Length: 275
Image 1 (cartoon, rainbow, N blue to C red):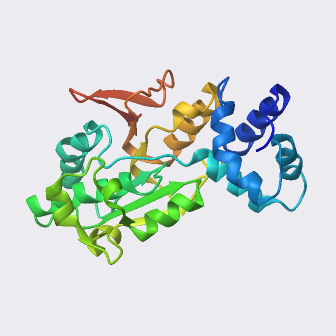
Image 2: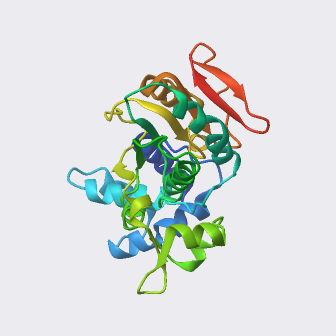
């Protein structure tokens, strides 16, 4: 990007991004836009953000739109991020569902899975629970979604460089659930990888993949406006089975919707149960 971003271009790009995927860019984030889109502009021989927007507004450029959204939504993540949700899953939710007399599988949705660390962390917790409680939770289905095709490709491969492995993963779990790969990285073991199905999903679109007992919607709602956040949480509520649970990020809260969810204190940590 050869030219600085003008105020008009920045406002137009903010509108494009919010309409396309719900992300609400704050003020004075031009540096972020410029750094994340520089390569795209170079590849398409564009010199300004305005030229990129003009091309995005033309018919037949859906692939470019996906690439731009991908660049603006790709974020790093951690294994067992924030810890409390995984402790709550292990100590409260899995035992609760294990004791329910149901012939249906336990269904869990990781709604912003990035490169796979969250759903694979959940799968490891489930495998550890099964080893401690043989015969329990035999049928668990994990669905993981993200808007970014590139992070989903990484997640489906289940292969990570050592620097990514070191972000929140203990040596004990690394030894149990990973094997060294030929290129110097680490490959997640088949029994964990096979537990997770990855799908592309924009949270602003319709959710067409059934009902869930647990939905993890962590560290993504902070990017949306209050109106979109309320809409997403309302539609997530519709995907939850009776008595199902919603798990948000450490810095996120419902801020309303008391008719849909009740708060459950887990000391420490908070989750929400469908009313």
